[in-house]
Image 1 (cartoon, helix red, strand yellow):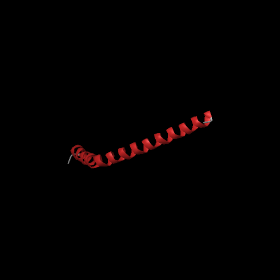
Image 2: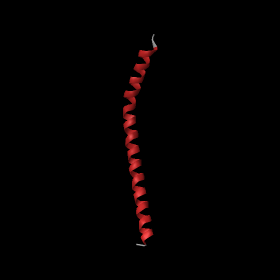
Image 3: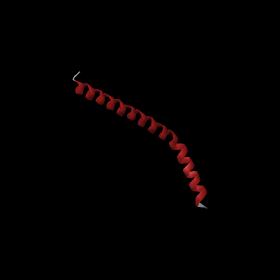
Length: 54
């Protein structure tokens, strides 16, 4: 048995199986990034308000 085709098949199966997992991870990452950006913007807004005294 040659290793090449078997590795290719294993890699292919792993890729198909992990597509959904990758999609879920990307969605989670995007949500957390959006939350981080929102927090950063909120903090920046508070800093600007504090600096101007309003």
